Length: 209
Image 1 (cartoon, one colour):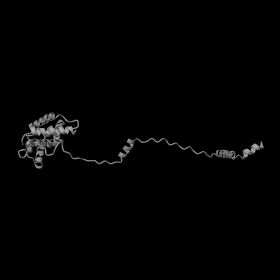
Image 2 (spheres, one colour):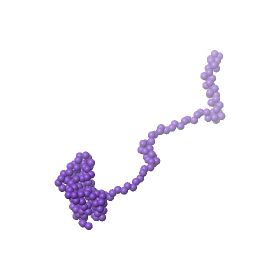
Image 3 (spheres, one colour):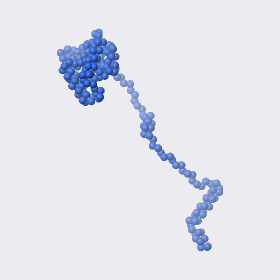
Image 4 (cartoon, helix red, strand yellow):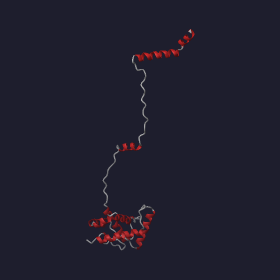
């Protein structure tokens, strides 16, 4: 029907489709790729674990190194027992409160085996006594100079008498109450007995020079 044909010919959309089909056929006939290649779909990004990131950062960080000089445990033992010896001779401690730590530390050094090693080192004991005689000279309650050499040659005193003992017990209890020994505090009487045993073996092995 002429009327229908004329309507088809006048339809711009149909004309465009027909032209498009003709061009596609022409391109394909000449081996020309006219379709756009498919875009690759990027894989879903997986966040890097934080510990890996931290480890990579650490490889770029330089940490300082040090070679500290520390006091030998055996010398620490003699430093502390001579300080205790002075307290026993004076009945007080010049350093203020919390001096009971020295008895606690000496007991722990003994438990770790350092007390026996220190007691066996006569040269070290004499060196500490000489050093303290020069730099830490002290007097007893009678005004006499305390002889550190006596402490390292058989006259060491680690258990104080009466009034000084009460001061030590009170100071120790305050340190326990303040949590300064954490869960490592033994009863005061047990601590004294341990220190008495240390005193006895130190005096037994040291002979006057």
